[in-house]
Length: 415
Image (tube, rainbow, N blue to C red; front, side, top):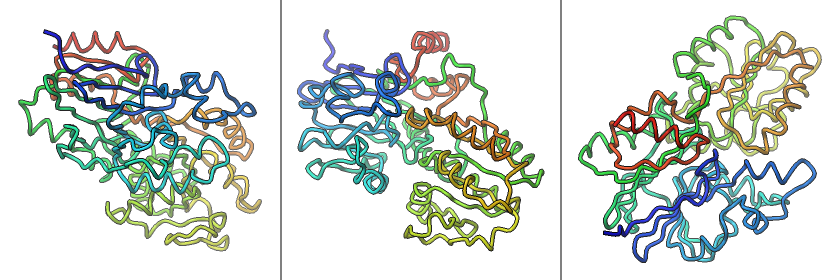
């Protein structure tokens, strides 16, 4: 008998990023993510050769074809990394869009709505029906949003309860949380622990780290590394992605525990912290912003140069490029020589990666030793067995991976 529920992976089947999954169930059509394919983006664009707009993206395959969106009942977004969010500003009028958080979307609107280029299309137009995907609620489209931990806060997985099959789309996720922020993502695991008889016919699972020679770097390892660096009493810079709130909250706790003071030198990181800190109970009493952000409306203390007499008593946290700008502007009497920079960027967008080499050269020129600590926003291969035992899928569909066959083999070996 032919099944009614059909799953089609439009993007992300054999590459990392650019996810787009369509589910058809009779007359109902749902789309899950519609991300930018940065693997293709970097082949067509560079520092001077810039995109002309979203239609060009859709014509060359950086985004899904427009025709795939026109008959869709709703689009579900798992999180706000661009390789999943894509561009909301050119979607068909009246399309229903479900997102993990309206507050997070408001931040994106503030950051990008006045951009002079394609980034202005990231926020949605006024005529879209944008709703927050309420966690653990069975919605009108028979979808349940399950909070999950990832390197972008907040993030959701989605469970579709179809007419004859149940489909689980994980989005991107990691098992280990680093702070109270990551604990917010326990909803996914608690749901399946509670609903142990839930049948998952199709598991659409990300496999970013499958087949890669990655070293698992967890909370305990990170604490040990930070303690060693702090014990050197040297200037410390930390590069962090603007949406990595879980890791930021963890670092702020450690900075305070080691008797240092945090300077957030990135406008977007400040926005994220101020947006979520009150509701999540993240203390901000040990955080300041530099004079470069004096014009920014903020509740966070503005630190003056007179207060920064010894850089070894501070930890500067920012996006990588903002970190370099801060370092270049430091007065000569406050030398960074002998200091350290920890690049704790999990997975970053290709646009930023192209400028990383130049940023590292600047840090080296300023006498800063750089260490890369890749704290992945994705689960590690050895953790797969825990997921399969929890979800017990009947079929596995890999996405967001360069090694889909290996992921399938791992699943079969664990059955």
